[in-house]
Image (cartoon, rainbow, N blue to C red; front, side, top):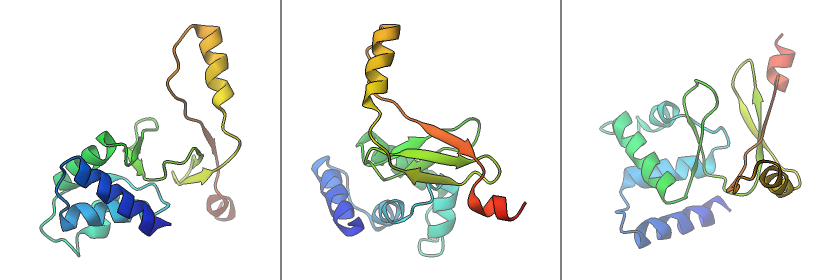
Length: 143
């Protein structure tokens, strides 16, 4: 599945006139293969040995390109660094309030929440996100 997702993403980049550099492909591949919702700095640290000339700015610039093309989502929670998610299926996040780990979970799509919000507020609702906060298994064990 990740290989297919990478192939589709590369075709979308090509179709948008974006050149496929080895760095760009490595960043995208890392995002698709990881489930950790990495920050830009974490992506940089994971790829710096393979691409010693790549800068953090290169990571940020590519993340912006990927986000603008709808290949990834930027997750912003409070004052912490943005995290990036290449999983575009409808899913939600459980976030550890101790270590910051983010874990995906799937449940019935909550699109009815958008309809209720629109009815109550009069907003034309475009999307929603949901996250739950608590303590992950690892932090519970190490307490």
